[in-house]
Image 1 (tube, rainbow, N blue to C red):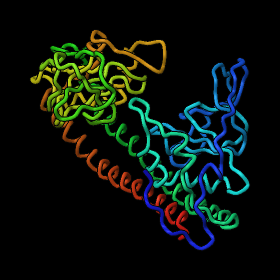
Image 2: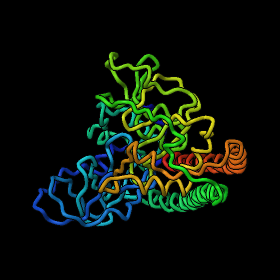
Image 3: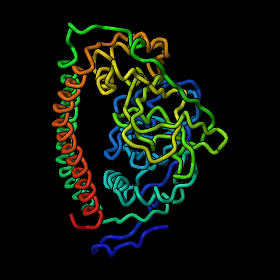
Length: 400
């Protein structure tokens, strides 16, 4: 379904996307040769920049062939805002469409149009499939594009790229601020938790029990309020418990009340990448019945010896991360694991419980200022994206 189309400025016309840039069906037949390869992971969202990771490499499976100047379009949701202009000849994932612009369109004009929110939202609303929703090639080919005369396209592209360049510069500065705040957080934890006079013990001496859930076949989407979920490792990855990062279990006999995640639980991810293995959170609230998986552990500290907030900050600190990385196993950097015996061997600082509470108060006071700044940065990034989309909307309605 397409939204109603507005009246265009004088001299503009509605053109089918495939009349401006037909979809190429040329395939690369595997012959163990080397080609410049672009996958969905190599295209930056919203800007279409091809990342440096895209490079010449051996190709042994069927790919789509492209040539310099072609438009590469990710047809899977959530990659519909990955649209790149090919910098040279090469091959790409078959999950990308290759469009070959004609002389009737300025390539960058069509590229920016395909990154506009209207196009992305409508293609997203017209995807089909459950596990890997994708937009049909015919839908893309028949999509109506507001098309001004070529000289106006060239003018709009120049104006667009000037304005978007300013937005990108502001966005880059905000991302730099994000990184500085992350560094500040680590500096706070390191400074406050580095006391060499504290007793050091193995974590197992203050951790009477570690509880693990189970993993079984689930559907790859979050449960509804009346369904049962199982936590994914990403549920504890980003600093707060996220119950939407879970899978749906349709087998009701799998329910085990002991596995349910509850407010106040201290959760620890035993398997992930080297940077994320050992990620931990204290659950603040729950609204869905989500169970632990075998990769998500619940720590039950001795409350007379350890304030779990102190444990949380230590395990997130550089000292704690060093211990987790030292004790984790796995030959590949992409996936590491730390078992319960190794967890119990983590060297843990143990000041008295009252000192721990004072330290937690000091850390949270300092981090509160950082959180306020992070909120402001996040709002700035949101406004930058709104501005970006507003510029694109004006451009493709003849108002720029």
